[in-house]
Image 1 (cartoon, one colour):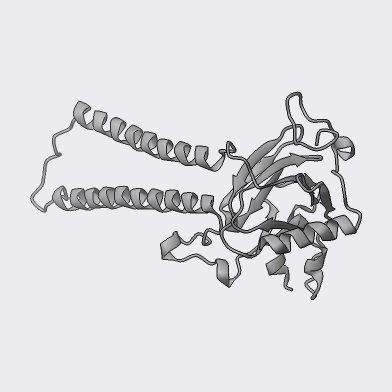
Image 2: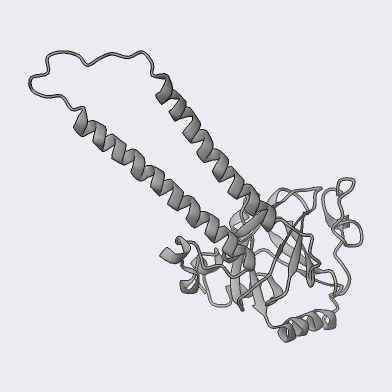
Length: 273
């Protein structure tokens, strides 16, 4: 396994094309929302760009200097209608873009539905721990060893998720600010010491996808990698049973973190993590 693969670079199956705006193809329901917003924003931006470029070209041609022009054109100190237009149109564009962004952000961060699976993902320098809350088992991750040799990926923790089921991520940090990012999900969220952040996804495609920390968190930030295995319910249950058989029962709580959670923050694990 190459180092490039370990750093989360998109493999052939995750390379986008024109239909996705060259984003990785969405493998979650929420990813489609991100893709549509991304493509819509580019279409609007290109439309404005074409209009502006066209007006620039028209001005260059229509108001170019001719050989017999010996006088300066009419000098204007201001043009109120034009200045109002230059003010109102950009404000309108920003408001429209803000509306669609806020609408989709609310959809992506909506956790009002009951999840089928809840995972407390804990960021730490420089790896990940996973608490599977409903099943009362956990997995402890170790920092990736980037040797570039076969088998290196076995040092990376793997988060298991059942395909087609709603998963809620409960994000906490043991030390500094991290960011939970699976590029194929087209969504990420910061992990802030003392706080609990949440979002939900519904994986729509089985496979193994790369994950990483997207927030510079120290010397070995680039080694803070993990995999996400989206599998069938039967395979997910088997993995949970394997963790239980290995004695990895109970929750990893906040007592091994550098600080306590703020008042009112609850990750659903014993000890408040």
